[in-house]
Image (cartoon, rainbow, N blue to C red; front, top):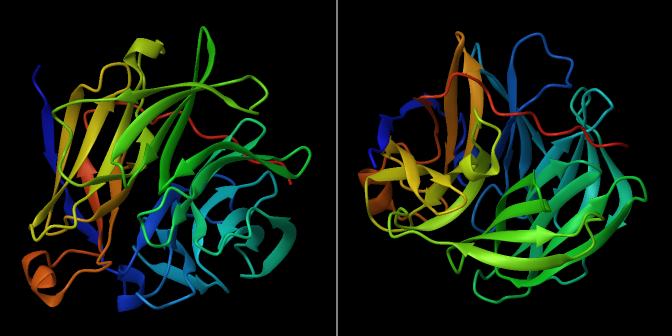
Length: 328
């Protein structure tokens, strides 16, 4: 099989070092009061010992970024049906964040009291949000996968014994709901059959391939599916490589058999955290966040683009389907 390859270029350089530490979760906003296309993203934490992070708003036209420091470490955000209002997973609870005035409001929803974990990546789906937690030490299977039911404002556990629950994609086939999910520390991409009420995992299989990039699979986005058939469903996965290497890799992976369909090289930034599709000048591009987390000075000299955002061409002619807005 011939694999398409693209090379990304640096697009946005954060103004301060804190924002380069662990950028993740970029999403093109579609229910926000901004005139220009805007990508929101989280800086999970502002340094190795920091206990705060931020929500950031990047104007794609001017490449200007606005940063809002939060009273905790955000793992994910999703847009709600109320314009400009985000639901954010922060530390071990869910909060609302107002994009207009920068205000944080508590929901009263606590996900877990286990101080060994914090909330990590999440995805808006019909009826709520699928999200996970990660072990702060990145080694114990004490994290979990959850579903936030927006109608009842309750959180239920779908799966336990994960280490670092990361990128997600939920799709539907003839048999029902199928969740593609990353657990970064065991370096696994799995598919989970979930019951129609989003209450439990019915079965699991692992997506395997000898062609996967070196490093930890991290963030994920669904790729456009031109046929709409489940056998053609694929995801774009960012790989976080902690080794002393100069470049990063992002891959488009077919879900049914793990075949690598496309690859993006990220020069100067091996710790790629998340992909997002954006439309610019009528073309579908891939926006990539990268990190400097844990990188020594030697690594910074080898990979000087670490912590920047990158932009790359793609072979896609249309954007992937949008995720739902979550009820408040």
